[in-house]
Amino acid sequence: MTTSTTRSVLVVAATDAEVAALRPALGPDVDVLITGVGMVSTAARCARALAGRSYDLALNVGVCGSFDSTIELGAVVHIVRDRIAELGVEDGDAFLTMTDVGLFADATFVNASPPDVAALRELRPVHGITVNTVHGRDASIAAVVDRFHPQVESMEGAGFMCACLDAGVPFAQVRAVSNVVERRNRSAWQIDEAIAALTDVTVRILERA
Image 1 (tube, rainbow, N blue to C red):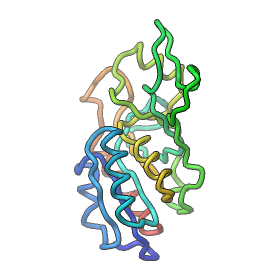
Image 2: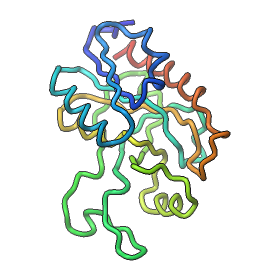
Image 3: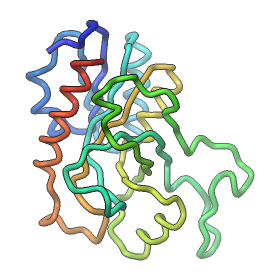
Image 4: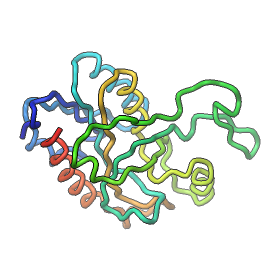
């Protein structure tokens, strides 16, 4: 597969498992970057890749957990706003953002001009958070939901968006919901189904990018 106008595309994923089924469909105009898990490695490796070659589109694909009961497992969503949930200061039982304490820091990243692709427009736009520690405790889940009202969470999204915004490269973060954010319950996860849905949507996005 090649993109419709032979534009150069960078597909970014944390693990090879998230793009393994996609690879056979990719043409020579599409590069794949595996960053490893976590926002720091994602931001650093994306920044290096975007500095080394001019891309028309960067596409972050992967799985995520959902806080939103209206999003079904296996659904593919477009994360248009993401933030680093843990960037802040603890003050006793209170959590203060950088803004709260009068310090400027890029904690929130917004995709104000996503690519005009029909397959992307069909996806539900959602707000996400990026974390170093995946939530799995009732108290911390309730606290982050009350604080930021996120719909999904990942460990890489904000790092990817930060790198793309800094580089001025059009981008989209597309993820499939593999699990509900709750106390760790691997038996309820639907990773294979999520990756299958993600692969199908990603192929359609790239065909029209």
